[in-house]
Length: 639
Image (cartoon, rainbow, N blue to C red; front, side):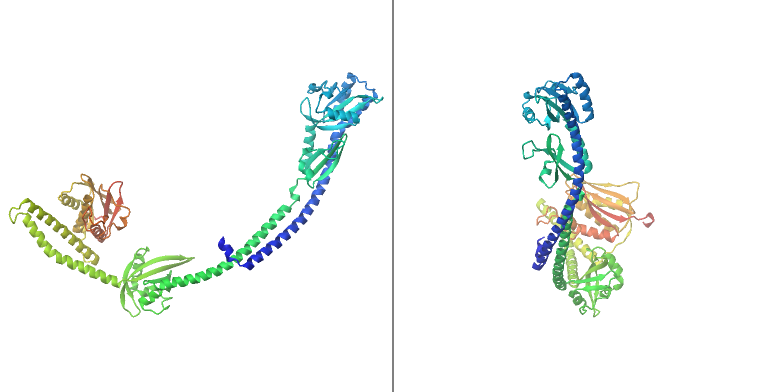
């Protein structure tokens, strides 16, 4: 994110801020026009709805009130004299004409003596109004003013809430007779009003103003906030009440100003972001191009100063690029190899298929002869890696001049061979002399002398084995070791090896596990196969605890016979596994090792098995180690 801000220049920011300001001004102007248009539409809908709701509410409330006035006229005409029989006929008719009347009560002398319907209202009968501290002040004011009044909502003694229309009645001599009370059902009126408002898609609120006061009281229906915004307000013509109604449409589709503002702001933000991203991309492209040019120069300088030749070809093998070391190594002038097939760098270009097969993995190397421009040859090591760039296939060739390495290896092998041969003659004489002395050729020897000569004879044997291993290593490396491959029965070879190991007085038990009704014939050199078995068995007993069992198991699968040698030692550590079959490699590298050895046994065994077209390996066990080798099955007639 910091990189994004740092790449934009001052004039970029100035332009973006200016465009953002202009867009905000234009957005607010459009929003104001939209709000004015939307409000005019809302007012039209509110006026139409308000007229219908006002007429409905006035009609529903005034009908029961006018009936109350008619009842008062009847009482006046009768001079205030009413009897129960007449009321039983008159009151049910009045209640039936107005559906919202809950009950009608007559209170001569302020005591409620007549009530219809009586069912459900028994608690209000014989109620004396002056005994009601919460209602009497209003009733007293109504009597003194001589004017009817609609009050409410009022909590009734008999339960529930309602509007009460109270009308003081005066007989012809202007004497006070009593109060007429019509209780209007508040729930039915509110339900009807709410249903009508929902049908009209408007929200309404109602409030009343007490007589003699200039301010309206709190809202008793709907949302009070409508009286404090720009909602439409109008007065209601209801007898005995000064009500005001506020109305506002709920159709949000009419007011699209917020949606318009959000859309325009989002559009502005997206456009400014896109513009900023274009500025940033342009600056980043410039910076990337500069860094890429620097990186290419740096990479070219590094590759040109590498001693190894680096060659890049296409999928067909045509050279696309090469470093300076390649031109120096092969004696060509710079850029003269591009477009040519890389096989021209080999002294034997016809072996390219074998090279591809030998370098199928990046860690594999091919050793051969390179061809310089002056037709001279040199030893080279070649490794190959496949590259995929986009949709194109490439390959990277790494070529190293190993002439000096080959010369040093030859000198080393010649030195080892010479020293080994020169050591063998005197060592054979010493070993023979010590053997004769131990065997009694010099007469009886005392025990200390016998012990010292035995130690010397054992050391000569170890030294002789080391020389044999070194000679075998040299012959295998130079390809001078000969193999007489014939069909060999594995069981007698293993039994002979077990007998030889047992003669060394080891304390382990060696067991051969095989099917006695089956022949285990392999194609191998009998002597070299015996050497491998002795090496592996010697290792197994060397690293196994005393009185443990070493198992030699024979199995056959897929035209291969596997010999598994399983011991109960400590196993091979994970860190040492990659070096397990390398020459002179030993897990214990301390100066005073617990187990003696040259570190050549496994390396020689691996080379011998591979020369006999088999393979050798190691498998982990829960306890101990399992070394195995596999050789091709020989048919009985090959014996």
